[in-house]
Length: 204
Image 1 (cartoon, rainbow, N blue to C red):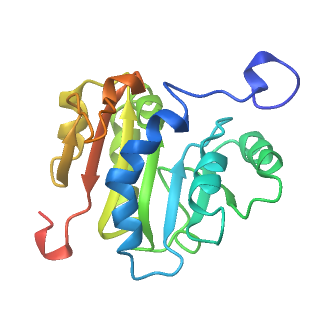
Image 2 (tube, rainbow, N blue to C red):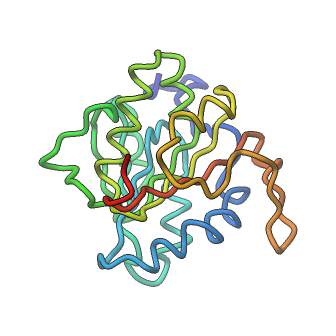
């Protein structure tokens, strides 16, 4: 799927590209990265596939310095091989891993500030509720308290997403949203959700 010369092996963006996401990323995720006690702060892109998203994030955030440590993660080795080739000289981390069972020696507890998910949760919904629950538990494990999940979904219902994240702090619930600059989330061709990992003493 990710190798060869077929149409499927070319760069492909679920829903939208980074230029559409950028105003929402800067409004919601950038302040979380700026507030991180880690230097550089860490961001995980869940299920990178053959998207150009991490390269665009790097070009936006790290043009002048290594402002953010960005991790490409996918279960498919061919996807990571392609992502590494696409990244070129960009200083990105590339890891083959199952997002439902991330290796603890590599993905330490409370070590990431932001997770970006553009369609991966949808794929796991198609795999069944157990996959979704395990993925969400891993997000909670690797995110620091107050860390953020920025998630775009076009398959699961809003109610399903909100139920999965019912013990998180909901910032955006998938309803249409317009930034102060007039950028509308409907242009993402998906529903936009933003969740914060609760502080440990808020866990239920």
